[in-house]
Image 1 (cartoon, helix red, strand yellow):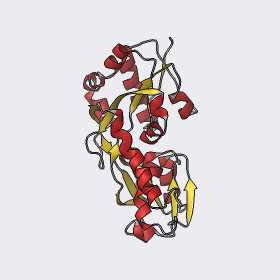
Image 2 (cartoon, one colour):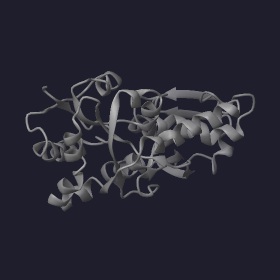
Image 3 (spheres, rainbow, N blue to C red):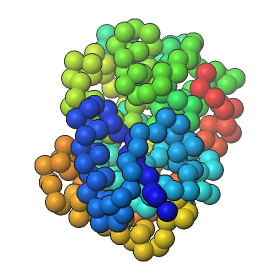
Image 4 (spheres, rainbow, N blue to C red):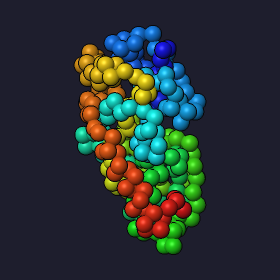
Length: 261
């Protein structure tokens, strides 16, 4: 089979995208050097392709059905505020000059989210808001931006008042776009959950999976690149570890807060 691969989730800047691609090339050299590295348009369709050798997904789509189509390879461990081993949180942020000093104080404010299928930008935020909602509502307006950077820009441009940003993305944004991140400030963190998993098609052979799991070798080969990618290593979690993401969704639904509103 001709395999394909991509690491699309943390390409926050062109420099980071180049580093992620270079890391992927080094990993593939040990497994299937002829693998084609692609830039997928439709991530949900891409993650379900039978010729997928390795990619990275969000934990929310993973628990909502993707896990039936893929194998879990590993979970990155990042050096970023809000991370703890293989777990991460979302950073609750508002504009630097906004009057809000806590999440409860944001009642009636405008919320921005990157996508409704995002754990960090939607599911974790919904879970954090649920205890404060009244009859299923908390915010005055909701804006879907398409990306965490888009949500940060919406805050900076006064098109939204609050957003939840993946803490790893936030750390990368602070590195790459200090002018943008200087225009927002943090209000707190959401509950943590397992980080964004690396996955492979069910058709990838066990021996290939074992080789792919030797990811730390690629990190050790170029420590400077690992530092730029804020990668400390990789954990091997069971798929059941991601059930906590579904639990966050269920707790919000029990609190009558099924959607961000």
